[in-house]
Image (tube, rainbow, N blue to C red; front, side, top):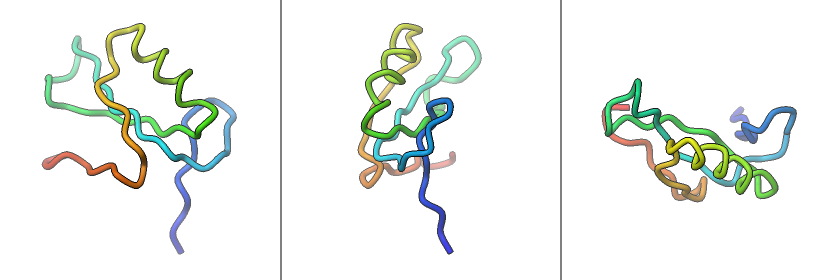
Amino acid sequence: MSETPICSAKGCRADAVWVLAWNNPKIHTPERRKTWLACEEHREHLAQFLGMRGFLKDVVGFADWQEPEGA
């Protein structure tokens, strides 16, 4: 049984359709990517949150996301 990934927004239980790849340059190497998942409703909010901090690196559709090698 496979679980459907859910949105990372606080309290949201909707299916994730986006992957927001990010890193904190103060603690991660440049190639390191952390991920948050987002539903359609929360994609923009989560992207703005990460973008304001300079953390957001990429936003990719969940179906198209490929985990970086060595992750």
